[in-house]
Length: 227
View (tube, rainbow, N blue to C red):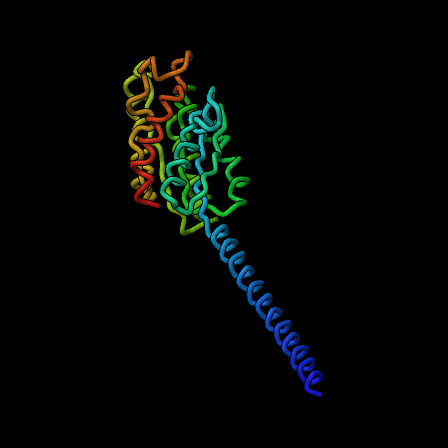
């Protein structure tokens, strides 16, 4: 009788243990699910920075990892900031072509927009008024799509060979648009790089990898306060 009673208690204990293990497993699974959800939330919380521009943004002649937008991403990652950089640079892009391309890139959410266009207009001697209108149209398109977007514009300059009036009018495009549209201004993207042979490729126009490191610094000074 005692033996049967002992066996019964033993079986009962095993049943409780089994139930306890099941609850523990359920709790563990809930913890794992919660962790996965947090990780997923962290991923979706990342904001996008779109660099929209010419071959200077695209990193012409360089490995993609050497282009200044990629260097900006490295800096952001090192600081554990929740931003993802999108390189929307295209070699040969004019302001008119950019106006036709911008909507495609705006299909993804944009939180910070960095506009680097106009250089190819200037090198082709296109009318300044035309460049201003195209850039303003791009800015308006971005603002309409994402009203809360933070905006940056990169200033550019033309060589003296383009003529004093043209170079002066062209240079003023960028601070004027920045002021009008409440945009942060990079005074001159190629500052400390333009015209320095050792920091430019053989064409004398596009920066080397070392040159792009300086471009990244020029951009970072203005971009950092917006992050």
